[in-house]
Amino acid sequence: MEYTISVGSLLTAILILVAIIAIIFIIVLLAKIAKSLSTLPSTMQHVDNVLADVETIVGVARSGAEGAKAVVTKASAALTGVNEVMDSNKGTLKAATSFVNAVTSLASLIKKK
Image 1: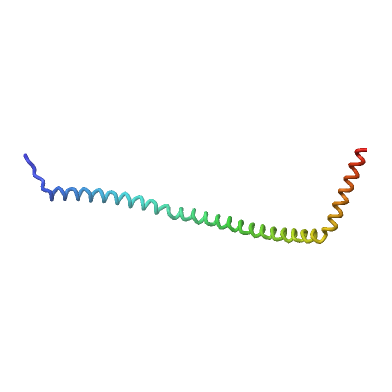
Image 2 (image 1 turned 120 degrees about the horizontal axis):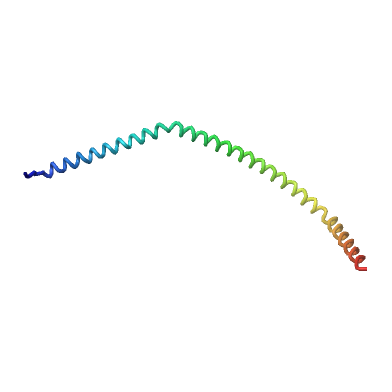
């Protein structure tokens, strides 16, 4: 017995086989998509919780940065005031330094004797 298969019949059989494989692939893919969609609401709830936490953290960081800025501004003003006092009292500071140096020198002379 001999069977003759034409090229057209062979191509038709191959196309039918490819179509069946494609349909199976699409069904499996749709099943996976449906499973993913069933978990979407809980996933979105987790995303909402994470975003709320991020918003809280950003708020705390913002208030901390504003507080730090206020402290730095006050410290800068205080240092400016100290600098101004030191500039206006340079003569007094030099005299006090000279006095301390003289007392230190006198003390070292007394210890040597």
